[in-house]
Image (tube, rainbow, N blue to C red; front, side, top):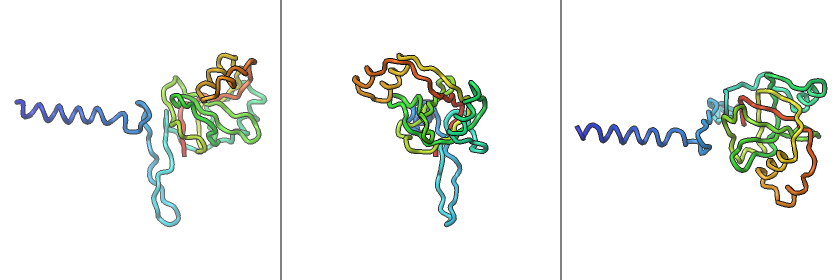
Length: 175
């Protein structure tokens, strides 16, 4: 009986211990896109998915989203594509996307249910969810500055609330 139970326990332990940590990003899975081929027939994986799996179809530029928010408080179920400027260096629990010539758009993740890689800055992202304008308190701005690794002097210099464009993502593609 011991000969049967010991191998079963060993295999179960291995499977449980290796599964959730395979992507080095806490317990949140990264789902690689199926392999694509370029014009020379070379395959490559081009994207990672976080949260709800979404597609890129219908994604608007950050500038287009900001223009639409000029006449609305929020936009629901929208997709936006932009370059990742910064990622929270504590956990990957928020990121900012660059909008051409405008202030960056802060992206948080619905229900704090997933994180993104801390080294994703500079990559393209497609996000789907709710875009809105938000007034951030001094305390929240200081918290974000701390997460971004700002110096104590830079954090102390934050003394006034700020209106920002924010996006709560339910799904993200990073490519």
